[in-house]
Image (cartoon, rainbow, N blue to C red; front, side):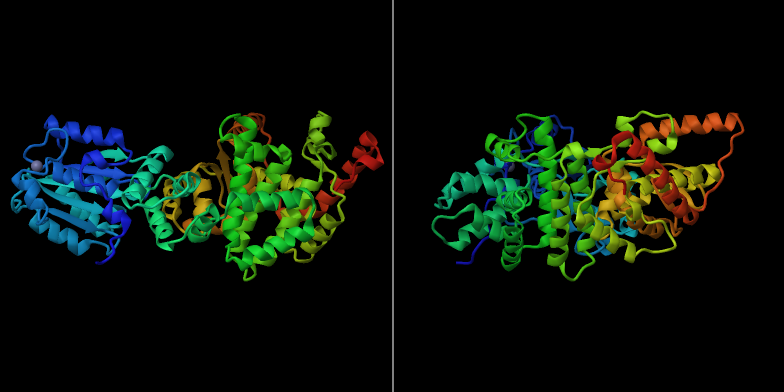
Length: 566
Ligand SMILES: [Zn+2]
């Protein structure tokens, strides 16, 4: 007997067996009962959440002759549908761009169904249709014949033209909750006569992140291992997942400064075939969870929360580590030796963890002086030899034509940003701003691009608020966006060049900062104070001079041994 994948075997064929999506199922059922069926539906939501399954059941249900609460299974239509599906037509837009199929659809749509009341077209991954196919589809959607129902399914509703969206009744499918996933997996296991420990079942459900198809497929693989005593480690090996214990172990070694063990473990991970990029992403997830755990007491279950509580990482250090890890995810894609790069960054993280909070002093927090220059300066005690070596190395590969952020630390980043803000204002143009905004939507096209997805996701939350020939000023909802933007600004410039075909220099502030900048700008305009454009390249020396002066004033304030200025 041939093997049927569990996912196919347990695919629901009636509403009763659908997992999750209760609200959607109820609305669809009621529309049939109350005769409110429309001619076009859009099912959107993450993969494996039941869009296609429910589309098929609905297609069946609207045609069932005895529909009360579910398909009856006994009427002539229900029986015929088991052997003949000519009235339910599935088109997979992902397999080709669909022009021919949509044309055929347009020619055949007028023909009456063979034995059903409605002919149903299910178009899966509809966002993959070409523009030509969308236009052809639109023609049909504008005046659908009485006997036709369209069900369009997609994971990416943002890629569907408004003209199509506006003609569909839309249903947003949610990720399936953990409890329902576990319940379904248990049901399948008992049917298949297989025993798995509860924690393993729960772990499979967790890993699949709300997608039932992924959960069942993973379960399928686990069962086919045909092994006694399946453990969570087995699941990690199968799924390529980086386990929580791996990340805890890395942070244990980092925090305890057990560097020899750390390096051994990194090698061990590579021998086990772990992808370092996955590990870095899991470390970012750890930082996220750690931050949540500080703010919300019972967000995670107790054992995980207790584990997170073992660590003591300051707010500033969390930001610094996030910055490094984000940078690393980008750098990883451009290196042939991920392990080496990973090790280098681990040591940078250990340096950050080495600095206790008390030593990190933000000058502006201590001395609220009116001097704008001094306010711009951040002073940190970074007298770690490793840092000095790194900074020396960075200087060596510096690019002379631009002011590098890394070169003299935070203060020159701030200086560079101030110059850029000044320069946007010096030549700001409403026309340029409008044209930039007009094409801003194009960023959406890169949401699933392997190369630019992170930047696209970042920029979608921002707004271009001022523009000149050379510069763009972005504003973001809150300050969590700014470090990510700042540490990737070069790459974001390359990305924007791809979109606009113009090499803009960019700078980002928060909405609050933007409000203040705007007020200042208006004040200056009123008082005839003009913004004079500054050449970024001329600033380097000036920055150094300022630093020297400031170093002296800082020393006056704090004394020599407590402070060193980068
Ligand atoms: Zn029936």
